[in-house]
Length: 172
Image (cartoon, rainbow, N blue to C red; front, side):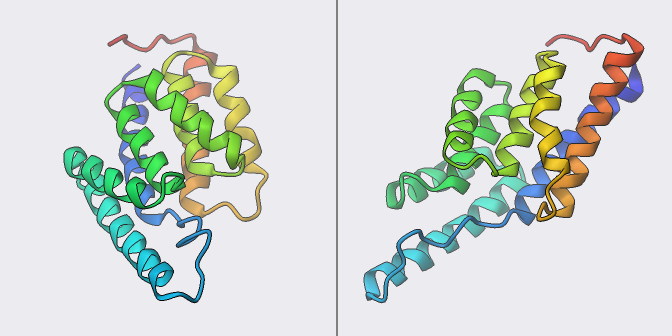
């Protein structure tokens, strides 16, 4: 039981670090040669880097402020939306986080961070089959970053430890 709890704690810590390795989907979906678009793209990239720093250091209040700024420039910024969902997930606000992750995955089914974060929610709720269903396609991807692949395997290991040994996780 202690090993399972430790695995979950380690998973959460690693998931926070993966934000730093996250590839931004694009600096801007509509970068043009006009100066305004280039400046906007630079501002977005700079704000994303600030956001990653805040997330890594668990400065959620500052991260949420940065997310608001990013979304004011680009309401569909996938990185900012994912970060908002991740903060909600880390704070056990699963319903709000689930809405965000589902929105991201509906628009970008290959967005690994959203699939991993949503599978963590499913795992926490003991919906192991649904969590496995989100993680399994990631294992087949050749382009998946090493950190995300490690997270997927680690979460699958936690699911297997719980479901095959009939251990129960403590409830919050």
